[in-house]
Length: 350
Image (cartoon, rainbow, N blue to C red; front, top):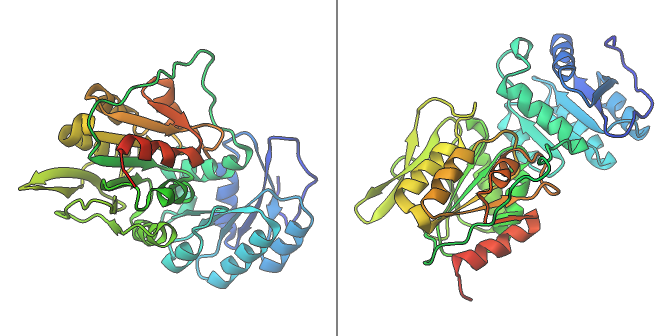
């Protein structure tokens, strides 16, 4: 398909119609090639200006927009406004933290591009995240095979001392819906690994504090875990833990990526298992891949409890689906039911 300013007729059901609002021609052509590596995506054209994007949106032929303009944040904001008015989802390719902070909304996926997008390969983490964001519109989550085991696990006696959450694609939007109802109802520290670049994890912490009223921090080396506080793994470091006198403190690990991610959920859960064992709850939310599966196996073997988000409410049922199909979950629940189950397991009293 030539790189022209055009919009096509509505495509068949299940195909996501994508508009490219990308000003650099080489970047636009490479993104088009990356999208061509996946089925279920139809690039209907591109818009070189915000007014062109708005015109195509008003025709109703667009399901998803990818927007990037390295030196023109006004263009990006105008396209975001048009997409918001049209109710269309957007992936913003930016390393501008100001745009990222404003874009943390359910219909906006923020992806930090590599220095040169034109060198990115289809198997790269950036491309996989972009494809997951686009395909989430069609809910092309992997379904469990017939007869997949989801054997409930019973919580061991005694109250948990820690709640650990792992998330990826769709996580920034899912986390407030799980955490908000927990405020003033649980006393345990909460630790989170969200697959996210270093420039954005501090913004995520600020976003969660605003949206949930929980005290929320980006974890730092030697920082003690505080009851009733959220601690988020910083981008580019795995979040581990160690005992120091009477405290459990954060340890930021600069080891290699795991499951193509850094931070990754598996190393966090291994550390949680080593220190807390049966006295920990792991919650696996929406995300691509299987990060967290090995860590949940270890936690369950030590007597801990695993909860997972269900397929219907997940943007991508990769991570939660992996632990559910492995039979590791005490419960597999819709996003809006997870908080009540956490409260029940954590034993908080009013």
